[in-house]
Structure formats: structure tokens, C-alpha cells
Length: 264
Image (cartoon, rainbow, N blue to C red; front, side, top):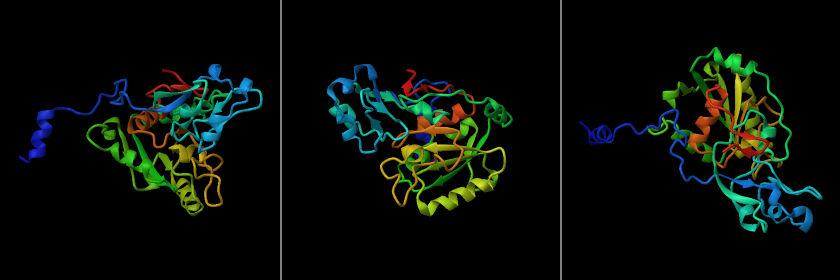
């Protein structure tokens, strides 16, 4: 018997159960939290946080407290370092998948989504096939996607699989800000998928452009290009966050973030 097989048998099951609360993410640093009640920008005319943000995820409207767009946040934590009032703070918020992009904005107005999506997905039972397209990623998100298939996360145990062909895919998972060179291949992949089909924007580049979006060679992520069903920010989001977002799409997990506020 190979030594690694023997080691695995002795170690027992390493995969966290589907119902575990933290999926092995205890102590993992997440995206920063914003407590608008502590923000003194309106009184002190402070905009240090917005000036420090490399992704333009923070805005300070005149006479109002700062606002944070998680769809653009890269988790650099610079806002927590320069904020004089403590409105921005470190957090362990890693599960940030939402169905409506407005839920990633602290000053966004959320809307009720139709339940038809859940009804369609129910017909698939507990199986989902994913076609991943790298639309200009730095490869950080791809590293996290690869980890989904290791013995700890073991994505297949949940009935979720990757497929190399869009013809057999139910979900189009996109990473990267969508460079000019990848725009047409991305749209062709979407068109090749059978109905019904869904889209997931994975990582801050796909949800808001990140630090590279908006230039002459990059789009600002998927907004305006494809009908996105799940938005998952993070630079990159960890494997547990990806699993939570996929299970939320399938109706097997509730959405945690509403109006830019993490439920936990």
C-alpha cells in the first residue's frame, strides 16, 4: 500500500460536513466592515479612506458618511488603517455571495428577486455542471477554484462538477474583468450553453472591474455584458465562499449579505 494511502486512512475524513458553520475558515480575514454611524466624513470633511482605496470602492458623497461598494473592494485593508474614526474595521466576513449586485453596496437599494430562478434550478435536483471562463484574471481566483477539488473541500460531494464544454454546462462561472480579447470568446461560450442557463461573477474583477477595469483594454466586469445570477466579490474569494455562493444559487443556503451588511 502506498504510504500516502496509509496516511490518509489513518487521518480519517478531512472534508468538512456540508452543514458546518465555518467550513474550516476560522480566523480567516475577510473584507472590511463599514459602520456608517461612526463615520465623521460629513462633519470633518474627511476622505482619507476614498483616497487610500486603490479600486475606487469607497465614495464620500457631500454631506454624507462614506459608502462602500463590495463589488469593487479588493480587501487591501488600507481603509481600516487610515480611517480616523474607526468606521472601517477588520472583519472575518468571507461569505459575500449575493443575487442582486445592489446588496454589495452599503447605500444600495435592494429589490425583491423573482422566484422563477429557484423553481428552474429545482428541476436539476442536486446536480450542477459549471463551465469556467478566465476573462483576464490574474490567476488568483483560479488557484481558489483548483482548491475546490482537493480532499478538504471536495466539491463533487455536493453534486457540483466542472465541465470543459459549454454544451453540457448549467452555470457559466467567469473570473477576470473581461479584457477586450476575451469579450467575444466569453459571449460565444454563453451563447453555446443550453437553456436554462445561469451566470456567476467570481472575484472582484468580475463583479466590479477591480483595479484593472474601466481602461481601454478592460470592461468593468460582467455588469452590462451578461445577466448575472450570483455576484461573489473577493480578491480572491476563498473556496468556502465559492461553495456558499454555489449552494445559495441552488437554494441550499440563505444569502448572508443584504444592503452591504454581513448578517453575522
